[in-house]
Each structure stands twice: as structure tokens, then as C-alpha cells.
Amino acid sequence: MRDFFGLEGSFNKYMGFVADTFILSMLWIFFSIITLSIGIGASTTALFYVATRRIANREGYITSDFWQSFKSNFVRATKVWIVICILVAVIILSMISGISLGDELPLGSIVLPVQIVTLTEILFVSIYIFPVLARFDMNIKEAVKTCFFMANRHFLTSVMCLGIHAGLIVFVFMVPQLFPLIFAIPGIYGMLSSVLIMRVFKKYRPEMDKDPILELQEIERKRAEEKRLAEIGKTNIIEENFEE
Image (tube, rainbow, N blue to C red):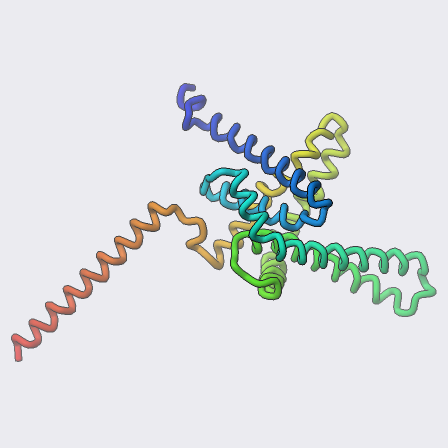
């Protein structure tokens, strides 16, 4: 029990994780509100920057890390957020118009499935785009291409992340007693989806968020191995010269 409730115990780590999740939610809400929702993209990028590092046990100062990411990615993330909003709004409005017109719309039976697939792809890309902007130095075009590839290559992960987001909202609204948790949804979603998204990222960047101590040890090990091989090579050359 002493180990469980100690400073390094499971209870302390769990409560720290809960506190981080709540703080992240409050930061996301605060920065989204003060920017009149225009900064939601930047807030989401900052949220994922902190969440993915927290999942990888790369702890830091949540508030300062959030602010630095928000500030440095504001322009890129805001552009992406505005484009996503416009595309989603246009597709949803066109779907509503198409459904209301029904059989009067030419090729209606073909257009609607195409609209649904397009909307799904946009939502899938939006799952990855802000974590990618948070953790990789890419321009918007490169980020969109990368996210489109990841979203379809890792289809199950994309569906699970979308399900987590929708499930959290539905669950909170279905249980009135839990409605106050709506303010914690950004942080909860960020933490849960970061577990899945980091697994995808590490398939392409295995060294990402590696423990710096282990990384230094590996570098030293490689240097020692290179030195050993070089010495073996010198020894072989000397033996060959001696034989001649």
C-alpha cells in the first residue's frame, strides 16, 4: 500500500494523469474562446503536442508547452481549421439540399454516396492533421498528403479515433449526471486518441520520443562497436602486411 500511495506510486501517477487531462481541456477551451473559435485548430495542435509527449512520458510544463505549440503553429493550424470547416459545411449543406430534392436531383443516387465518402475522408484526415502539425516540421501540403496516407493505411485506427470522439459526446449527453464532463472532453479525447496515433507515428519514426538516456546509451554503444570494428580492420591489415 505504501508503494501504491507513494510519490512514485500508481495512485499518484494516475491522479497526475487525470489532472493533466483536466488542465489540457481548460487550456483548449480558454484559447479557443479568446480567439473566437478561429484558434481551435491551433488549440487542438497544442493539445496534441502536450498529449503525445505525455503519453510517451516526456513530461514538461503543460501550460508553457501548450503556449509554445499554440504560438508556433497558429498560422498553419488556423489555415487548416478554416479549410476543414468550409469543406465540411459545403458538403453537409449540399447533402441536405440533395436529400430534400430527392428524385428531382439528377444522379442523386450517385452524388450522395460520393459526398458521404468525401466527408468521411475529410474527417479521417482531420484526426491526424493536428497531431502531425504538432510533432512534425511539414508544410500544409505535405501534412495533408501524409495524413491522407495514414488515415487510409491505418483505417481501423481512424475509425477508433472517430468513435472515441463521437462516443464521448454521446455518452455525456445521454447521462445528465455526467454533463459537467463535457468540459473535460477535449483532454480525454486528446489523451485517448494520442495512444493510438503515437502507435501509427512510431511505425514510421521508431525513434520518436525515445528516452534521451537510452538514446545516449545507444549512441555510445554504436560508437564502441564502430571503434571495435575499426580496430579489427587495422589488425587484419597489419597481419596481411606481416604475411607478405
